[in-house]
Amino acid sequence: MTNGVSSRLLLCSTMVRFSRFPVRRCSLAVLVLAATACTPGSDAVPEATQLATTTTVTTPDRSDGTLTIGLLLPSSNPTLGQGLIDAAYIAVDRINDAGGVLGRNVRVIEQDEGLGDGTAAASIAALIESTPSVDAVIGPSSSLTALKHLDTLVAAGIPSCSPTATALALDNFPDPQRLFFRTVPSDSLQAVAAAELAERTGVQDVAVVYIDDAYGRPFAAAVEEALAVGTQVSRVENYGFVRSDGDLAEKARQVADSGARVVVLLAGSDDGAAFLEALDDTSFGSISDIIVNDTMRDPSVTPRVEALDPALRSLVRGVAPQAQSNDADEPFDPPGLFAAQAFDCVNLIALAAYSASSDDPAEFAPEIPPLARGGRVCLSFEACSMLLNEELAINYNGPDGITELTVSGDPTRARFDVFRFDDTGRAGIIQSLVAEVR
Image (cartoon, rainbow, N blue to C red):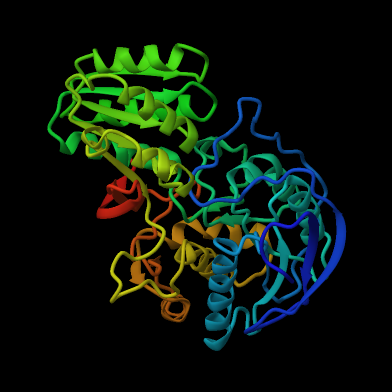
């Protein structure tokens, strides 16, 4: 199958496999009229987007004694998708080499999440109706896909783990059975990282500037909440903005004249760059630091960042979930963007089924969060399963050594990259920090 964006939409299913390389069967479907990119980090949530309401349906018995994992990842996105898929297969291969789960090899069924809504919906339906039955799903990668279609998987009684969907709106997904979990930190934890970076400046006056929509408002509230818990910052003012004529320039002037020393800017890449451009037309006031969120690393805004006054650009730093090791001599295993998170998803599902001695999602799904907190630390499926054989509680830590989940299935602590822009507008990592739920 050809990777990349196509004018046609391919629905790809994978032959059931137990190891090494997938063999895909692809059938041509309908023309794609519009495509939504699946990207790591935050998908800006449109104003009209709301969490889908879960419905109760009669679900089939999925237990057949063999753990079957479905992959709902964007194989048509070569930058992100193929690395996630490869990492998932590496995890399955190592699990099977260690003896598998329930005495059998783990099976994989793959569907392309695609770049558009129609592909994701069709692929989810195919996974739910697949033979053999899928016991758990890795994906979706996109926050927008998760917000729109996750209820379908939950209603079918299928647990899912996303390695890249960071949307804060997913924190409150209506999931009483707790079938959805993530190995990538939510934007609510990124808000803590931004607050911590602001606190490290030693400044007491902070302005939180945000795009005034369903993405920016809760993100800003999370940053303000994190700052309120700390003791360093004494005054926080917030400034919501929209891209209407005159509003952006006026809001930038208000921020520059506010007396705030630190500005935390929360927006999608285009809106964030637009606000920096508006701020560039001011005297910057007393601002000494500008902290931006992960979307500002988008290469599409590099020329706009390069065009900023060097004096302003030098004030900008950002935080983003760590996608891969920053040490070239010690890469994560497996390497690649968010590969460690996909690898963790597979291992946690397999360990949960191993611990529950069942491939029935109703039996093993509740086991997932407890496996990544407390207990004896272990770094691989093989090592962790040996501890489980001794009836010991385990604390699975994956390739990044920091996997830890809440009861609801979100990371409680995570590493974040701190980045700065060079003279060409490109983002470069300067350090990392660990943020924890406050």
